[in-house]
Amino acid sequence: MINITGLGAISAAGGNVAETLQSFSRKERNAGPVTLFETPLKYPVFEVKHIPEEYYLEGRRTLSLALIAADEALRDAGLENDLSSLRVGVCMGTTVACQLNDLEFYQSYRNTGAASMIPVDRYLKGNLAEFVSRKFKARGPVLTVVNACSSGTDAIGVALSWLKNGLCDIAIAGGADELNRIPLCGFGSLGIVSGELCAPFDRDRKGLNLGEGAGVLVIETKESAARRGRSSDLFLSGYGSASDSYHLTAPRPDGAGLERAILKALSDSGIKPGDISFVNAHGTATQDNDLVEGSTLGRIFGTDLNVLSTKGYTGHTLGAAGGLEAVFSAAALREGWIPASAGFFNKDENIPLIPVTERADVRGDYALSTSLAFGGNNAALVFGRREK
Image: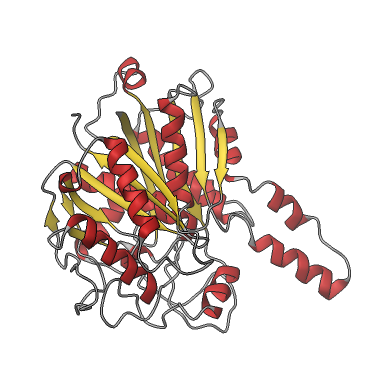
């Protein structure tokens, strides 16, 4: 198995992992109106309210968020900021990256007839994995994954394959995305953004809330951790990915792609569905996602499964979602509890599962995190808290 030796996170739920767990425990939902940019849209969003000055990068908020989470994960893993003497890879997922600079560029050209090169420079410097790699002097493989809302999950899965195949000994992996007006308008035009706080899996759910953040894992081979004198009770056990081949923005109604991804992740881990203690579901609070995902999870795991969505605390953070939810799943195994699934009050009779409504103890040693993405991709990760 591959050790998880470091965790880092930033979102509206907290500026680090410890703050996030405190918010979860208190059922805090830190949503509000958009303040990062001007917009007539009144949807509630989950913004990160403070970025420390040492991490601030003008026009490159996604990179700032990634840097904060990566820095925390490296410190948690006991690694220095200079990784040049080690075989370290970086794989990061995103959808937005520094996309807001596109809009600034075109607005400048439309309004003045002259195109400013400042947003072009920011955009070109917005390669997430390259930025993290350069910042920490990592000299192993480097890859930015852009695969819609499964980007963070897929990035961690790719990094897992690097370690299994000997391309590196340590990997920094996860996802990051900022909130900006382009996805806010885009999701709004699809009619899937809620004017109220989101309610994943609830009968009366009305759509998602957007958010922003970053979640990063440091994963490494057992041999690498032993050389560094690091012990860990957490493991990244398996990964699965499968396409629906059905629709650009809607999940396949029968959930066949998601089911294949989950079963691949379980097979990769060498475990059975009954070994899973809880599922941190994608749970966006849209009608289609929650119906398909809830039905698929019920079919695989039965109706007594402990399932939750943490998007009620963070909003949907797009490419960061898989990274954040990987961190949350690993942290839950480490701490021994999962939070209530925020926003759930009324059972949807068409969904066979009921999310946890209060903090619950983790029973068992494995957890599953799932991601569903526009374009039809489905991805799943399995985490363990002690070696088989």
